[in-house]
Image 1 (cartoon, rainbow, N blue to C red):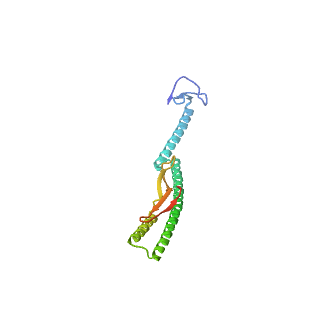
Image 2 (tube, rainbow, N blue to C red):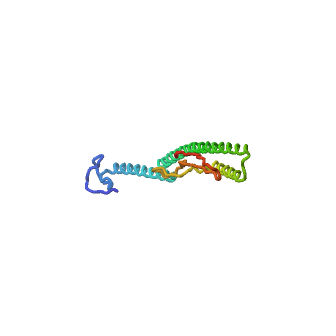
Image 3 (cartoon, rainbow, N blue to C red):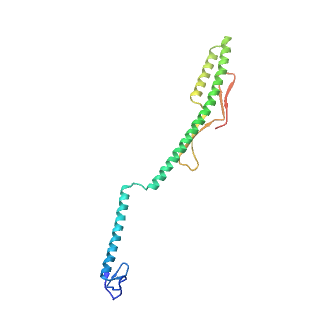
Length: 190
């Protein structure tokens, strides 16, 4: 660190006897010692900062600002999913209500037909089998409506798959053995 050389002045007191190889300034012995103490203090600061950073790295598994960004993304995604699910439930209820209404109309028409057939006592096995088949079809449409579909779709720019409830445009129920077809719905997709 220190080397003696030509007599040049100390930067503090004009009496120079040693040169610092780091800053290349000349010092007298007392000021050189003071300069070394200042360097020691700076070294202690560097060591302290190093230890603080090392301690923080050892205690922390991830970067907090990046983790908070992921947490925010998670909350935003969950909110979008909840909104999509809420809309899907409302769409499903609307579609199912229309289907249910049409099924009730079909049952009412069937009840009128059965009542009039029963009143004039004009029925046989074939008509009873056809009516039972119609009831089974209506029951199946009630339990598993074929006019309602729940499909996955990827929203533009999203890695999360969403769902959407759609309703087929034309939904016709044809009763086996019946002379007519009952139109259950002719609705556009929601």
